[in-house]
Amino acid sequence: MNKRKVGADQEALAAGYLQRQGVVILERNFRSRRGEIDLIGRD
Image (tube, rainbow, N blue to C red; front, side, top):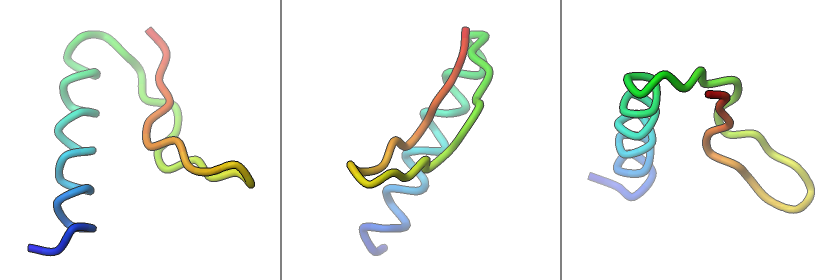
C-alpha cells in the first residue's frame, strides 16, 4: 500500500468515528495557501 492510500483509509476511519459521535462532517481536504485541513466538522 502506498502512503496516500493509507492516509485516505485512516481519514475515512476518523470521519466514520466522528460521525458516530454526532459530528457532522462539513468539508474534507480543505485547501488554502497555508496548507490543508483533512476534516472540518460540527458537533
